[in-house]
Amino acid sequence: MSAQSGEGPGATTALAPGGGAVPLLSTSSVDITAPEATDAESGPAAVEGGAQAAAPATAPGPRRAELRRAAKRRSGHRWRWWLALAVALSLGLATVGWFGAQRINRPLVQPSQLSALPSSVAVPGSGPALPWPAKGQGAISVPALGYTQQSGPESPLPIASLTKMTSAVVVLRDHPMAAGSSGPPITITAADVAEYDTELRNDQSTVPIRTGEVLTEEQMLEALVTQSANDIAYALALWDAGGVPAFVAKMNALAQSLGATSTHYVDASGYDPHTVSTAADCLRVAAAGMSDPTFARVVGMRSVTLPLVGTIPNVVTEIGSNNVVGIKSGYTTAAGGCMVLAADRVIQGRSVTVLVAVLAQPVPPPTIPKPAPTTTTTTAPPPPPATTAPPAAPGAVVPPTTAPPPTTTTTPPPTTTTTTIPLDDLPVVDPLRYTRPVVEGLLTATESAIVPITVATRGQLVGTVITHWGGGAHRVGVVTSAGAFLFGWPGQRVVSGTKLLAVPAGGAGGRRVGTALYALGGQFQTVPMTLSATVPEPSWWWRLVHN
Image (cartoon, rainbow, N blue to C red):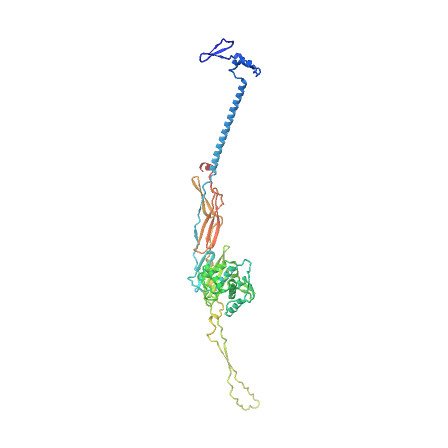
């Protein structure tokens, strides 16, 4: 409530809360259209005169500036608020995106792989009844298959020149020959020739040599095995070991290392009947020799050319026929007929070597020199004394007087012949006549018994890859990428297995995921294993929600 004051025109007063009057500025006393007073115009007088009226009012200029500053402050606050909100939203979205990316890209459970290959598979069929020798010993071996068989219980027997197989293997292991090389030169010594002369007198198998002659290691081996030369066996023993006893010790050590425990050598040629072995042991040595390319090449030569004898055929006449590729024969009176043969059988473009041996085979009887027929000439007795005939009549013909001719008698040779030549020294025209049919029949039957067995075909299912997601199991087949086969003897077993690789989630079809392995004897086949299709993967939304 207000009232008029009496202190001046236009003045008003207001009642204070305590009942006193408070003067109010009259609106008519201020000209708002007048310009603002400057500092000079508002001197001390003006201050003194208008102090009471100007005290309660605020100048318009500072007010506007304050309002502008307040507006700017409010605008700055709004900008910072929106920036903070944008940053917060960005951080939130980034966090959500990172979290989602982590869930989407988080690896799935590693797919598992199961093999469907059996641990082994039997070679179908049944083994044949082999034509074993009726006498002596027989054995077969297929080294690649790890298969051996013998005719029955064996005991050590003399083996004659089959001993030279071991001599050749010892020399080649001590002095291996590189492909295309003929080996070091070997000079024939006087001791070698003296041994040759002794053996020649004893009617042993030899090749002529002379002191100072130089032969290569290859030529010496050719003479040793293709001509079965005992003198060359002696010369090689001296060259390799310095003497026969040291060389024979190496031969026995080799036999033991090969598992030929029923074998014992006392000489380098086999002429001594105390050098003994079995048919199965001979095949162990033969297999070791045939694994050496130089040995296999030399024993497979149909003829050789040597300095003092020229070109001569191999004593093993079977080489070159019926797939025979080597290797050695032998004969003495104590050993009988002995032979080891090797043949290569080709099945589906792949070769497999077969070895057979027979010992102590019967030999034809020796040839005994036949005595010349005895011729006896008998002279007729003298005629009786001549008598005087009466004179013939004139004109008569007188017959001539003739004496009886001498009588010649031829005595036929006796039906039985005796000789003072020792039986062992009597010649046998063809000592292996009965051995060849036996060993050849055994070789043919053994070759026929070997069969190919298919162990893998292209696209064959050999395993499964399993991945788990979406509450279920997802399967993809694993298949072989190629085919494979092995040789086998009926009744043997092929061992198989797998070598698996890690399979990533989403692995593409055709990706290699392992290797299938197959083995029989010394044979091995490996076949790559691949995915038959791409391993299924869940969608990104499933990964975001469930992974």
